[in-house]
Length: 191
Image (cartoon, rainbow, N blue to C red):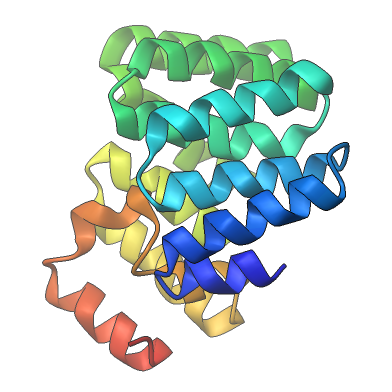
């Protein structure tokens, strides 16, 4: 857990070292193995993070939260087609209904990852699922910065865990120059 604090503070080398120590102490703990991948992801060591997330899913393909990290890591690295393949595997583990999977597939074929993002935003709003920070990270790839900021504002109001990672999450790199982002960082009081 200390590694989470460290990577949230931008201290990536220390976070990775802490995760490696945790793995040495408890090598079979999937949470720790996934957390190591998250440390690598935030450090922008995407190839290593992807390898680590896949390793976790080899051990347990039903460790569902790992997909939520693997898919963005693949996307940020520029592996859109592979991100989509893993996204569909994630939907299978979640037992997403066939119609929704077909909508995702059609959206991807029509507009690539932006289509997936728009379909997720639509589904998110329809079902009233409330993990605003994670949805903001996915929404940014649709090109709809306003919607991403709407979700980030809701995450801020709810004091969601991810808000402490505003400045380190690679999924949000595209927002860094926007004055709204700088204001949000100021309100969260991140340094």
